[in-house]
Length: 155
Image 1: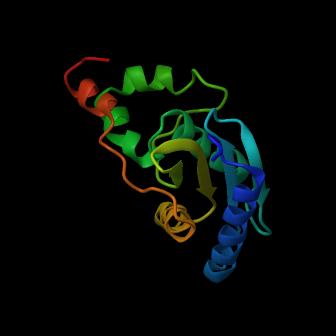
Image 2: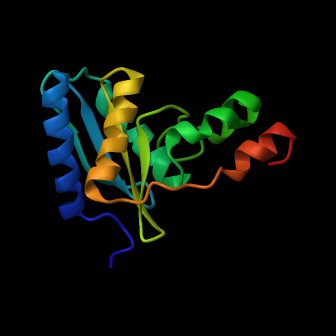
């Protein structure tokens, strides 16, 4: 089995995302990246605002390279904003601590990330989680150690 999300996987993700965007009546953008954060597919559906593809890409990138859903980074960004602001600029794309980014994990292997942008924060997160569930990706992630270390000053 591949150690990265493949184009075939990305097409399935896009099909579910498009269906859900139409159901919500929202112009959304969806990004899929491999485990290294490199773009596999990105789409800006009809009606999506111009910045949403880059926001979706940042969410996907974050979830892939940090190996945790982007929302799980919020406690770290809140508890140590100076350090987080430095880390957030170290990659090819910004590291963000917000909902709508999920890590693609199958059989315990990290294979990529997906980012959703264009809805409300709750809609982006709900759609991202629905993709994982419908397509059979793992949804269990241990608390990220950085969140604990940030609280006590250890990085």
